[in-house]
Length: 101
Image (cartoon, rainbow, N blue to C red; front, side, top):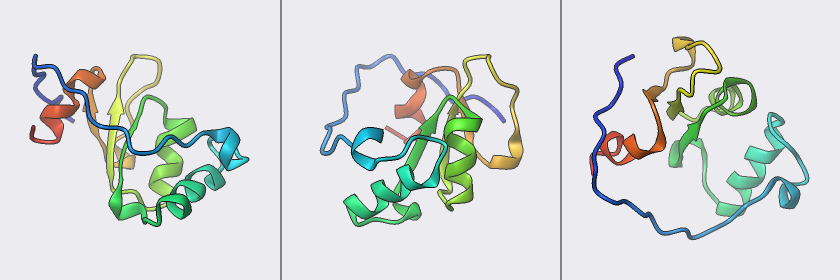
């Protein structure tokens, strides 16, 4: 999958909620951590962009729960696996370009 173009402008999105594994009472890759997020935010998988650097602890579960918008931050510690349907970036500084900002 082609890597997105990096942009140099500063980008600091607002943070409206902070949810932790402790508050969910579950740790990734258990689906309960993700389900807690859906329930707390009254939203479904279609409402999220999931950004992850780990297939095992994040991306596989996000895929299984139906999150279609996924970005994989390839830090070189896992091989790519296109089955999970994601946009690949080298680091999070590429996110604004992925989002069209």
